[in-house]
Image (cartoon, rainbow, N blue to C red; front, side, top):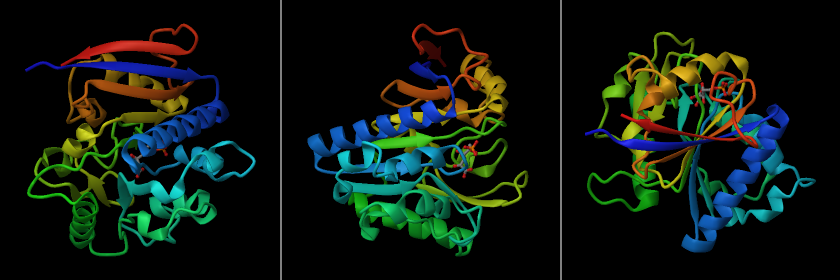
Length: 265
Ligand code: 6PG
């Protein structure tokens, strides 16, 4: 059955203003969730784009750090490369250096994917840590309060890469995924049903190299095996994109930096 997703996109002039807009958005979502639910369970992506946002969240000279009650934030990872935390490719390592080492987020509130372990073991341990922290019974999917996604120039998101096994995984929370097209060919990733279940999902995307694939993802034919980001049609029917002007370059022009598309699939 076809579903309609209201895709709202905000276009910021450059990477620096995008990082501020993302830090402000995350701060608002976290504080709103803590106020209404007592704690916020947030899953973040790795790669390079989020680093600037994480640095702003940690910067005492910026308004974000002191606005967040870090003791009530539980931080998870959308995916991880199967490398040790000190490897320069580690998403945890990037997040630790940019954010975790600089804010009073209790270590027990950080759910690291143990990339140094054999992939299947890392996935199973992460899945169990999520189940325990969400106090899940049975096969229900965890409902994260916020999930921040990125998108690769090939249309992947999380570590859901084109033509890889994880695209077909429906029953698990997290899996090991072999990605032959990547140098770090083993990844651990949340599965797409978990990504769709979240109360709020947003993409953070910057750079000219994402403009063409973003247009295809949003307005092209539905080809999820080629463009896994097309799968991200949250159950709540809402999707937010935070973009810089380069990434948004091939989307319909926006008024006051705000755009809206209805994606029906
Ligand atoms: C990863 C990420 C991945 C990332 C995209 C975009 O492990 O690499 O989770 O999904 O979000 O590849 O990465 P950039 O921000 O580096 O463009």
